[in-house]
Length: 195
Image (cartoon, rainbow, N blue to C red; front, side):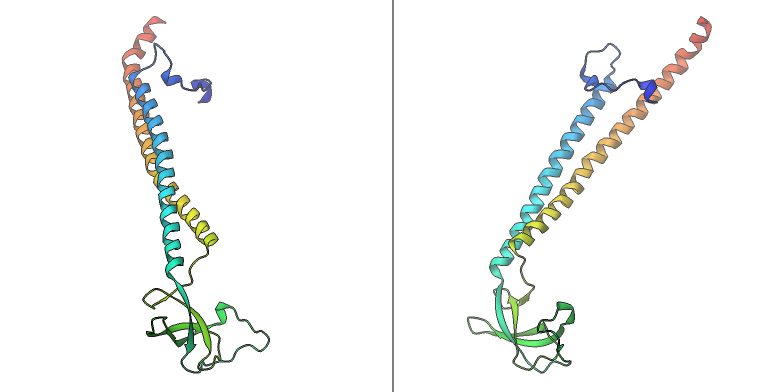
């Protein structure tokens, strides 16, 4: 097929050529428009998503506060004797109570080490109303997460004009082939008479 088409020449649809058809010019503008829309929409959507995520995580960091909670009752199980620090996977849920700076008391389920005694301290993170929240992300974790989400959003958004451009270009190609078939059906028999 490449031998039939000849070498690829850049920007050939914009060059002056007596054989250039209107369909070639339309296809050139469709390809250019699809490329520009793909790049612009991808970059803008990715940037907006990354900024939004980073802003949300920064707000989370500002509003979340650590508090010292106390385990309400003895926790079943026993802490491993060989280690003073257990991983999050070895923790169990237990009821704990904490007091906010303005004096309100709250209770909730938190992860603690097995075998924790009543009154054992555990650090929890709370929102301004005193409700439990997950530990806020660090600035570097937030930047990494925002970058990943921005890339995903940018690629997803850029796929729409890219696929649309491919679909329009494919339709133009089919129309061009149909027009060639029609012309060949009309002119092909005349070639046989010339020989």
